[in-house]
Image (cartoon, rainbow, N blue to C red; front, side, top):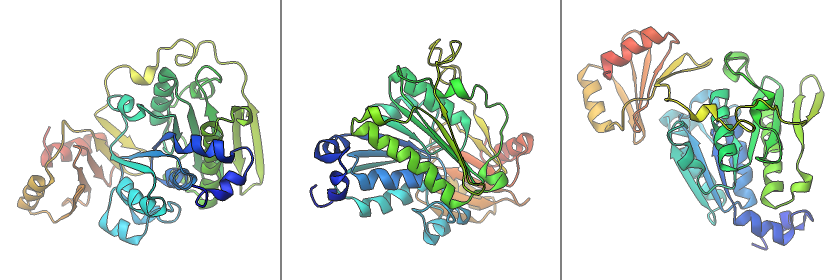
Length: 336
């Protein structure tokens, strides 16, 4: 410990005592895209004892501009992001536990994913998942660190159950898709900074230095040289999460169809795990060329759309954002 973490331990607010606390901590990172790869890199190098990473997606060439744990081989082989990330991270720090979970995060599995975690870090790109994390964390009493990046703008906040308001007190509705990286782009430096804001707040909490925690929402625009911090006020007394304790994202049934904003993709949850060897045979039997790895299958359909089948049962129909057309193709090749 003394040599690996010596420079971090020389930093007085952490020291040896704080470092031991960090090493005995567990962190969940949801989303291993641009934000998530920076977060995981910082947590692993800082010596967090157990780092659980979760993502539903696979590496594509367009990711390499800003998602720093991946390379061209990962994209060529379409490895799941958490699988590629875990491989890199284990080479960085073999003394900690790194758990890679290839999965969508839903109301059905969020409780299992956050079980035993000391805090949750946001590496996602959509408010549907952020609300789910927010509600699950506040119900379980686990701090949730929010972060986002799009264009040249970034933002971050720390939400601590029983101490601060929650995410819903600031952003009460995500019915509109808003701007995403896939719609207006993003530059890599803004991702690094937004994720670093998250990471440093995580280290404060893990080292038990709550007095230094930032008490507000920070936003910045690197291109326009703007910075703003909005201090937390009182929670919204009508907040369904931190005040009324209804936790809307944890109620009801999960959607079995999800449009992935800006990506011309529709995701189907499926009804259970898929035997990829069996499905490769079926698709090839339908005269489709299949590219496969141990985690997923990819094929191009006659109309130019792309079909991706995951071992956990999820299916992506890419190249469109039309629910009806996507459902037709899903039913035709995978089944209702």
